Image (cartoon, rainbow, N blue to C red; front, side, top):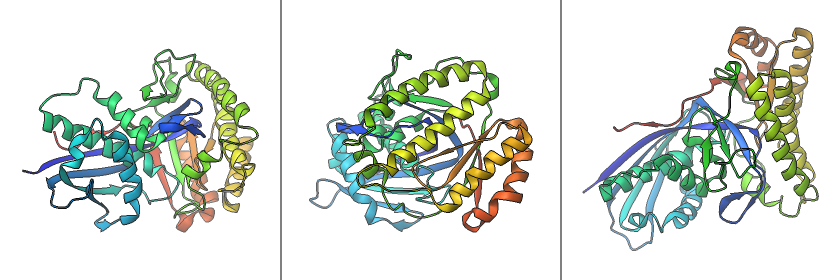
Length: 345
């Protein structure tokens, strides 16, 4: 007998960044993110009759092309959840996945991909055991974390917080939670334009970057700063203070890359065009007084964050001033999304 599940799960963009972790994917500091809408991964998982002797008999396809390079990461993930997902050893597993955005383009495909896979495996666990999982999304967040830390935030829509934080009593290092604080209406329909400066694998992986925080000379102060910034950001979210919000989010992005630049060994993921774009954003904001801000993930690409009402002017700015700095002029117009979708109900 075969069993099938299919989920679509979004990427997310962190406002307060997670950078550095402990054993078992436990974050060194709390983080908070916007869940995206147009940037997502669709994953289908098939359980078939197992024929080989390997502990895990599986293959993974991206857009109908088999991806053997993904297997070590997925096998590590399987080993981390095996105590709760023993059925993984009993079946041939076929994983077929598609991203709505270019792979390895700094849009956190691991977040959308591992969360989609976790949601599928939990759905299959329910089918096999013929019993609903009462804390389904919490467990999905926990499993996702074990695959990719930022994936823990992708199982919910809107604003999502992950990591123990004194200002949010429900917060946990084990799983993310939907942000329950007061949110000013200006943030409810925020936009995120993803400017694709570079498409392709990064020179240094996020996993390696996280590891370099262990002996980083500024790590402890950075972890404390994340707590301070999250506290300030919560106030901005409540009051609708866009200027302070933007200053904090931009500072968080630059701090993330500063940590990379003074790691040992040090590395730079920004590119010259990244810096050119940041300078043009600052010029645009100075000239127009409009609340357009940026953030960066662990890569060269730039996320433009802004309220819905200025979208037309931002779009014109991107087309007229920024596309020349983008890979083939490519950018993605995205917004805050509602979270994952079960494609087989």
